[in-house]
Amino acid sequence: MTDFTLMIHGGAGAIRDPHRYEASLRAIVESGARLLAAGSSALDAVAHCVALLEDDPLYNAGRGSVLNADGAAMCDASIMDGRTLKAGAVAAIRGVRNPVRLAYEVMDKSGHVLLVGEGAERFARERDVAFESEDYFRTEARVAQLARAKRKRETTLDHSEPADAKLGTVGAVARDRNGDLAAATSTGGVVNQRAGRVGDSPLIGAGTFADNASCAASCTGVGEDFIRTALARTAAVFVEFRSLRAEEAAREAIRYLVDRVDGRGGLILVDREGRCGRARSTPGMLTATFVAGVARVETT
Ligand code: ASP
Image (cartoon, rainbow, N blue to C red; front, top):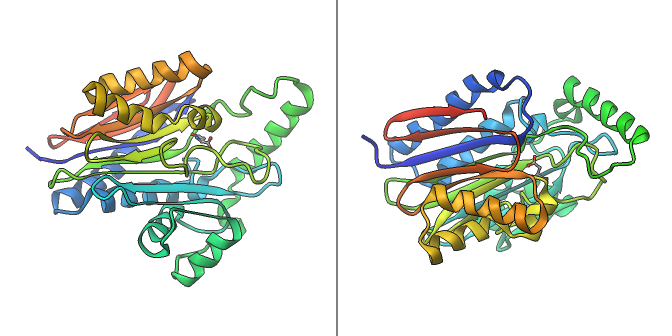
């Protein structure tokens, strides 16, 4: 038996060929679980898992970030400590290998919660955060995907239709052996997004939230929907003030997202008792959990 809980996600949407994510999700959740088993904090474990997801080009974060309309990978990330309610986030940054590590530095060392663009990149250099060249982010798959998205936009008037059916943001939530909660989320945004567009992932309360009094939550989906419903915080309110368990709170939060803004996406959460929940309004969502010594991957 273990007394910690960890859950990660690799995005939601209409996931093509879900099996190709299984080995990676399992390896990453097991790696995070080893840290928690050795006594690491929930905060360090979620940062570790999200950094591994960012390094894997399969996911839309860090290395595998989708490209915006200018052909650039612009990343957003955030992290929150449920014990202290400290949080850090970055938005619209370029070239940083692990945006979640920079978000951690913002939380720990900047005295601020959110840094954006060039100022965030300057802070990254001051803190010796690793950078990569543009080529590192321009994977063949992403370049082809952007070309497809641009073509579709020329031939369709429906701009609300996502250019790619899968919204592959990544995130992690955990409860450690001390009962402390933490959450982190990282993304390259949506394919062909306007330069300067920021989604929910770096916004505390929208894409990420953690509070020992309720739960740790990380969201994925159409960011605008999650911002307008403050969805991560909404899920926490359901746990804290309606005493819902993780699974019910996740389901209710997604019900609220759909009822209020017809929103598309999903979320994962770990509640204050260490129970896990996941829910989505999309056809699929990639998640892995580690509870009571057992890793479980779900791709639907
Ligand atoms: N939520 C992200 C955003 O809107 C996209 C995603 O989840 O894939 O930037």
